[in-house]
Image (cartoon, rainbow, N blue to C red):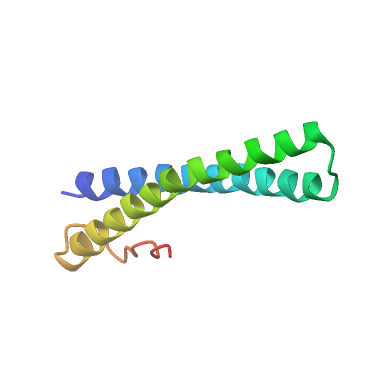
Length: 96
């Protein structure tokens, strides 16, 4: 009975870790962008343009992961309300 709950819970955990990993990478890209913004050589400008394109490219991926995580949170809440989860189970909080 609780196998479905545990399966969804583990999927939510994996997606949450993936989101954190993507956001850490994005933070690194933004830090690099800020550092290169102050230096104005031609190679630095090319690097800045590349980093900006990478940040824009990865944003939809993070948004899709957040939507997937939130839908799993809804599924977990539904299972908890129908008493198909472990006793005293709490669904993870949704992400913005």
